[in-house]
Every structure is written in C-alpha cells, then in structure tokens.
Length: 434
Image (cartoon, rainbow, N blue to C red; front, top):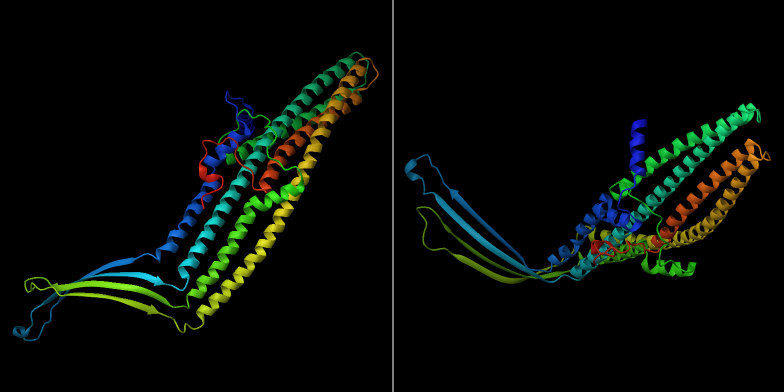
C-alpha cells in the first residue's frame, strides 16, 4: 500500500514539459468524458422523435406477395382434380389528408422533447465543467497543502535539532526537546494524510478529465461575472438550462393533450392499390388478371370504452404537474443563483483575509525565531507560531480553491459556464442544435 501511494503521489507531483491550464482540462473532459458522451447519445436518440412525428404525414407504400399450392386427393385416384398453383402480388399506397391536428400536435411535442433534451445535455455539460473546475482547484489545494506540510516538517526538524543542541549545551530542559519532537511527529502524520488526500484528488481528476493532472497553474479570474445579484438573476432567467428544460417539458405536456384528444377525432386518407395474380407451373395460363383501386377513406372512432377521455384527463394532469415543476425550477434557480452570489462574495473576502493572515504570520514567525536565538522566546513559543503559520498557509490554499470554484459556480448557475478558447471543440456541445 505504501508503494502504491508513493507511485501515485509521484504521478501527482510530476511536472511534465507541457502545462495544462484549466481551459485545456475542461476541453479534454468535454471530448473524453463518458458521462457527457452518454448524454449526447441520448440527445441524438431524442432528435429522432421529429422525423418519426413527420412520417405519418408522408406517403405510406407497402408491397405484399404470396403463392399457394393446392392439391386435393380422393379415394379414387382417377377422380383427383389437377393441382392448383396460384400467386398474387399487391402494391398499396396511402396518403393522410386530414388527421384532426394530430400531426401538428405530435410535431410540437417532438420539438419540445428535443428542446428539453438539448437543455438537459447542456446542463450536464455545465455540471461536468463545474466538476472539472472543482477537481482542478482541489488538485491545486492538495499540492499547496502538501507543500505547506512539507515546509512545516522541514522547519520543525530544524527546530528539534536546535532544541537538542541547546539541551546538550544545558540551555534548555528535556521538556523543550520533547515538545519539539512531539510537534515534529504530528507534522509528519499530517504530511502523510495530506499526501493521501492528494492521491484521492488525482483519481477524481482522472475520472473527469481522462488523464493524470499535468503542470497545473492557478487559473485567471473568470470573465463575464455579474456586477450584482439582480443582474445574475436576470441572466439566469434567460440562460438557465434548468429553466429551459422545465419550459420544454411544459410545452411537450400541453402538446400531448392535443395528441390524446386527436385520437377521438376523424381522419381522412387517400388510398390506392394495384394487384396482379395468376397461376404458375405447367397449368399456368398466359392471362394475369389485375385489379386497381383508388378511393378516400374516412375513419371516425365513435366509442372506445372511455379510453380517449381517460388519456385526455391523464395528459391534462401531467400538463398541470409540468406547470408546477416549472415553478419549482424557477425557485430552485433563484436559490442557486443567490447562494452562488453569496459564496462568491464570501470567497473574495476570504482570499483577502487569508493573504493578510499569512503575511502577518510570516512576519511573526521570523521575529519569534530571532527572539528565540537571543533568549527572549521559548521553544513552545516558536512551535506555536509555526502552527499559526501553517494554519495561515492552509487557510489561503482553501480560500483560493473556494474562489476558483465560486466564480465558475456563479457562471454555471446562470447557464454561462463554457470552455474558453475551444476552437477545436465540437460545436454541438455548447448550445445544441434545435
């Protein structure tokens, strides 16, 4: 297990020649992530609903053929009639002329279903890009934490040696040495734990992006962030894919009501057929009779045991449910945007505070070390300040990670999180074709 962790840690901390900024990681995820690929396949399957809805309004042509051999046996062989061998072929064609609005309704339902599938695909894309951002930021944080823990271990190793030397010189007591050694052992434990957390971050990164992390760097500030909360809410109302999916579901549900109602209405179609038949074999004649017919057909179901009315009521109930789902989606988007705005403001403030905390902690550490060398500070004072310095470094790493995620979460809540500079990305992955 230790060898496996060491190899994974070496993989995570390796620095290849080619750097991998956040936008490249996003693009790689879009091109290789199996979850998004499966969602796209479902979108392509849903797109077939439109030609299926149109197909009923197009001509329908079918061919049929058959052949038979009839042989009758009697008790008296000389009385057996000759065998009859017949064949026939028929071509049928029909064209729907009037369907009481069923074709229009099914087409509306299919278009709405496709819009919903496109919105679901784009929402899955938003989730993937946000997850990649989180994995990227987690990797940066893990690297910073491991580096901070390693620096603490190095500092405490030096401090433990210094305490031992002072003890050997009779300047400090055994207590000072024990305090330094205890803090060093604790720091080594925390270093191992942070390395384990980095291994987990590497695996999460590979799962989303498709390959191990390369030379990661802190991404620039996200562009197109809203200036205030109301602007963010307005943008979400226009661009949220959650709302787009809910609106498409409402349109589809209302179209399905018309589809259900059309099942009890009349249809008119033009029908034509051509058939030819004859005999085959040694008794076949040269004549092959044909039969041609053209006519109109009116079909009007009068009573179906209440099935049509039941389906209409069922569709009405589903349409009402879709309206409620839309209201729930609107509230959910408002909550998400508001929470994202609050988290973004908090993350910005946390970065500034953490940076100030680290600057002050570094100055205090340097001062206490100098004061220790002159005998003005004890070993425990230096150990406590070393802990404060580590806390400040970890707080800054956490704040920077939260800011990276909060900026992209803000864009995702508005439906505006995209891969920057993705000239080579498939065009279908941003907004989808209608």
